[in-house]
Image: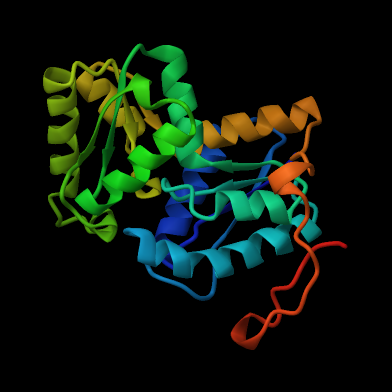
Length: 246
């Protein structure tokens, strides 16, 4: 089985961390290809970054599809460009945010999400409503640190993250925690042991779901909104991005 996981930002160290987490959970016989765009922001923190991350990310997904990937994973907790990716390719596309929410809803009555910055909270709350899981989420919290602080051994980001998890347990009565950033992918096991509640990493959740969809032999429906894009000219710097059918 060939899975493709794309980090929508351009930070290579984060891509390597995501790839390691994906390979650690993948079943024997699953080959994980990791990629990142050549253009875009170094991290995705809010709507503006998201908009500029999508073109390069879609390019990587389309390339991987042509190379035989059987499923794609978008490794940004905002599920950056998820609908566009599902329209662009036939193989299943899983966002790590949606995957983590669904997994948490299967093992806990109420879960909390702990993310990085306050500006990420509205995006996550919107997605929870969209996925029909807002009532299962006790609260979305932010630790008040930048995404790239998780790459800095001298940062107090991990301490802040742990403190928010404890606050979610005590103040929000959360039964499980969802880590709201792909850059936290290597922390779930230690935080589960430390806090005594399930802590879910979206990368691992997405790999597990992607493998299941491939084994089921299903692909993205090409009716309705995920029908292939209509072929038309794209102008300017996007002239090479036209894809689709009739």
